[in-house]
Length: 51
Image (cartoon, rainbow, N blue to C red; front, side, top):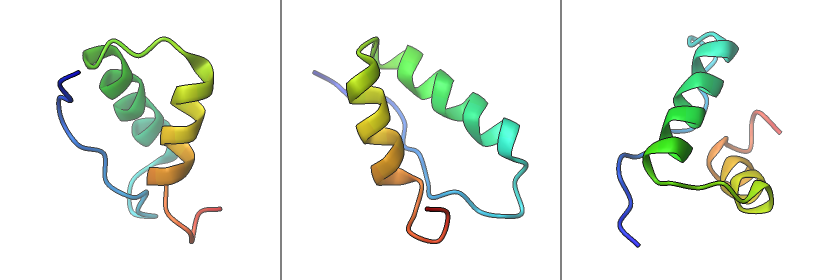
């Protein structure tokens, strides 16, 4: 499966809704519809400071 794009860690200078929107676009571009997979990817890329 090809992966399109890359999601960076969340940076406090970006507004939260914008980050979530970018994540949604990333999932859509990569045809990801499995919620468990989305959750795992989200938690792995968001960054330790945010958790």
